[in-house]
Length: 110
Image (cartoon, rainbow, N blue to C red):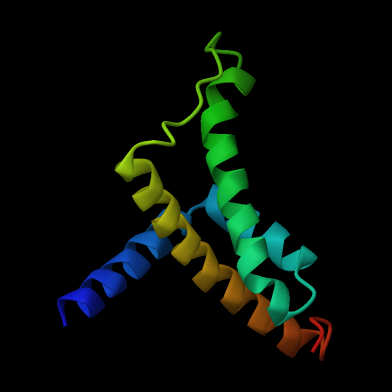
């Protein structure tokens, strides 16, 4: 039961992390490129990569004179955050794609 509670907590946290303008725009763009449910997991993974890249490059692109700093790929906190983001994007992209298929009558593929 503890494992289920932890999984639900990760899903909630993922949704909370994605439920902002940046996350929703990334999810919307990913949904536009999503052609079928078979692509759902890979597209969600790419959305996580884009999300992390934007977070890392935002200070540089804002002209704050910051250097590009790569995330610490060896830390458990990085991978936990990536998992949380992945679960959030799975949920949001799944909902967006479901609505896209309903609205466009099969526009999402089979």
